[in-house]
Amino acid sequence: MFNISELGRVLTEEFLQAGGRIETMEFHTPADLSKLKQKVVINCTGYGARALWKDESVVPVRGQIAWLIPQPEASYGIVYDNVSMIARRDGIVIQQTGPDESWGYNDPNETVDREEAMGAVASIARAYA
Ligand SMILES: Cc1cc2nc3c(=O)[nH]c(=O)nc-3n(C[C@H](O)[C@H](O)[C@H](O)COP(=O)(O)OP(=O)(O)OC[C@H]3O[C@@H](n4cnc5c(N)ncnc54)[C@H](O)[C@@H]3O)c2cc1C
Image 1 (cartoon, helix red, strand yellow):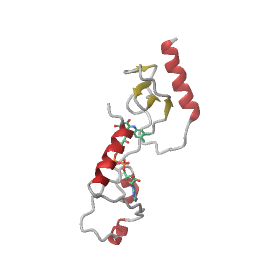
Image 2 (cartoon, helix red, strand yellow):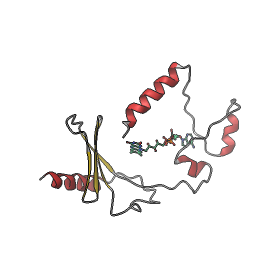
Image 3 (tube, helix red, strand yellow):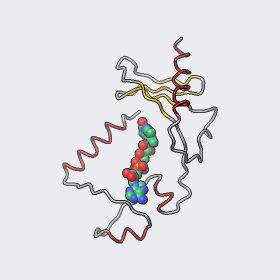
């Protein structure tokens, strides 16, 4: 299990220390890449590749997570009642996982679902009752 926030911070720091620079820009079509003066472009646009490159092999999988404050004494994860709980150093992540791997598959909805988040926390609370 990786603490992804910390890993991101370390990698960014190493990149900057090695002389890297970050410039923010948005590409709406592949033709926009011609605005770059660099000869080599590494395409790592993640889910954005679906829109930018019309790459439909990149499929959205919706997941609603809830965060509880970090609890250093919790150093494990459990799955209970189709809800996963993973204790990380930066907080406890709780997520409805559904009955199987198809849960959220091909669902591009990015709207926060507070009810689902609260339901997942309530399920995990029952595991400790
Ligand atoms: C809420 C959440 C929690 C997660 N937690 C974990 C976790 O705990 N552990 C774990 O291992 N993984 C986790 N993941 C998954 C992990 O974040 C991804 O697998 C990982 O970030 C993918 O890396 P990537 O570099 O391929 O793409 P991304 O990190 O998505 O990077 C793509 C980049 O391209 C940019 N981009 C996209 N399209 C364009 C465009 N048209 N123009 C300009 N820029 C563009 C985006 O802004 C972004 O900066 C989580 C994901 C989410 C959403």
